[in-house]
Image 1: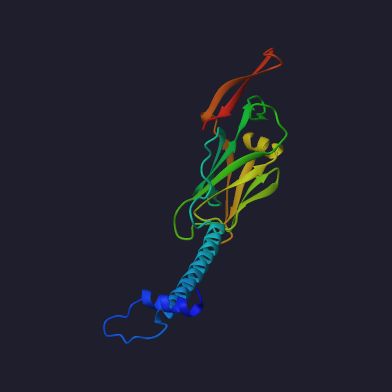
Image 2 (image 1 turned 30 degrees about the vertical axis):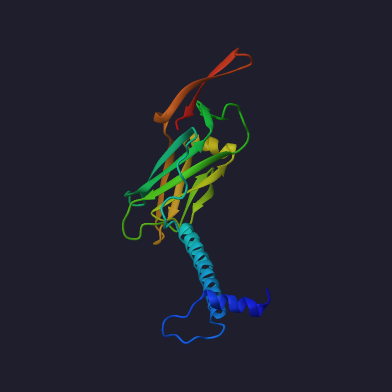
Length: 223
């Protein structure tokens, strides 16, 4: 169909309103106008989506949108800590979920990978909650493991969370109560606290190797 025939057919599909003078090519112009309007709407939607994504990323980095990491549904060891200001006032709490790890209790806690010993790293999820109030938040927050800081967030909102990978050495220090949290508030005040293994949530089990000739009592975390 030629363009002229298509224009005439479109004009016939878009009748004139009562009292409106008959204009040649009105139907085709109406189709073009609607197409332009649709393109503008799509462009506006794309721009709005990009702006929302940028805003969400900014707020997430600032810890201003609650917790993003969900609590683990897999068996995990729980490590908790209460945070205090330099004046001794309670400032908040920190909770760490060490996933798929087992321990052997003794003079020093021995950390094993899930089911079998492993030198690989361990995955953990952390949840920081600060006491609500004006200016609640931190410029930065880190775990101090063996004197070395491992940054969790910065800035940190009143509620922040995330995931991190710990080496076997770092995870072992974590379950042996050798890790602390240190954060800096906006006024340069320090918020800190020790994190300790929550032994009330341990689940006792037995691990046997070498054809069940050698069995060890182990402890796993609850879901």
